Picture 1 (cartoon, each protein chain N blue to C red):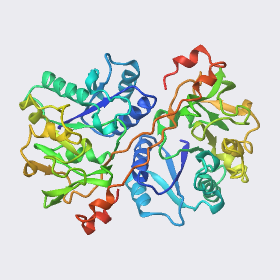
Picture 2 (cartoon, helix red, strand yellow):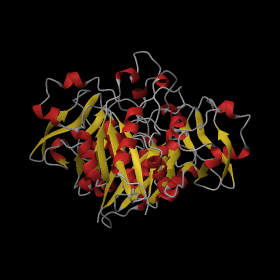
Picture 3 (spheres, one colour):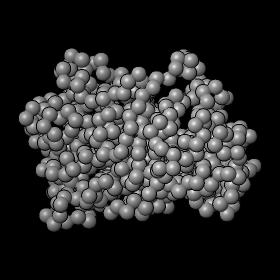
Picture 4 (tube, each protein chain N blue to C red):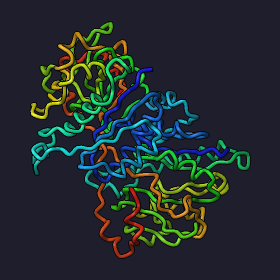
Length: 254
Length: 254
């Protein structure tokens, strides 16, 4: 069986544990998954370790802090600074240092912690030969964004934002054969590219153009992943509970 | 084994399918679940039917439209009009019409479609004798809100908003023994109560005060459910894809 390496960048915020618990429970439906979780932090955290341990999944916990020049400045719009670049690259490095070429079959997938994944997606992309692609729901200002195809050949893209990008699709919309990652040891996400070119920066080192991409369903029209976002939690009343707060309250992991 | 009747009110919006898929995949980890999904609509929808069928769960699909006087007016704040009241009451009616008293053991839980549930929660409340309660994460402006307890006896509440409510806790923080619902055939959520009193309006008909409530963990301090919210999806670029849009695009269920 081919192992699916699921790479998840994550960072500390109020909803982090909830999001990771939810993703872990989706992954628990999949066989032969190796979950690589990379924290945006100087060191790994107990909170994330607890989620990983309780998941009973095969996992690797890593951490790397986003370098200062890549942090979003105040008032800078979200799309200016892509998130998770250093973390995803850290996971690629881990694969290259720990998995031996030709000794194991694998496919690599980048799964953010607050997206929504239909469990059927994973087995559909498990047999990816090079790079496979599929549509993603609720992304790019569209109901769905992704490949148009005919008899398994990709003919174009349903996309509005910059359709001339080499690979105009979302992080959640492709999987890569592990060998391709290990053979092309220099391939990585570039942090200096224009907005929307992050996926292209990695894939341009792995495949030449859309003729080398594979589909996972006959018509490329089944939505099995959605780019959902968890709204920020407002903890504005926490100061008011202080009077009645016990010491134990601070120890409760949320 | 006791059946858990999970009651989920839902309504049409861009993220509905993603949210329902995610909840269905959590429930798939639980044995003896009967999922009652109630749509805020005049008739049941194919989209929801598809999610229910694919879930392989035992389910009941219902629909009832929120009456006009309960709809939130433009510019009216969210907390003014509680959501899902008619839908949850519709599910209670279904239970009373379809499940025979004394013939089956059950426990009833209200689970919104975008909250986050740790799968361990369900087996912890399965043996509820009357009404059991536990803390909920990320609600009421707090890291967590819920009972304080000592040796399984509830001593008070960690809550800031109106702590004098009869039952000052969130919809996700309690479960009810099925018999109690069936015996008290008039018990229901009242749509005319002040904000924050919805839970109390039902529970006041079922239990007298906090001495009749049960705990599900020794110290009431394990967070197994979070009041998360899925951010609204922005589909503002959909009009721009019109030119290139095929007829099939409209048929794609997202």
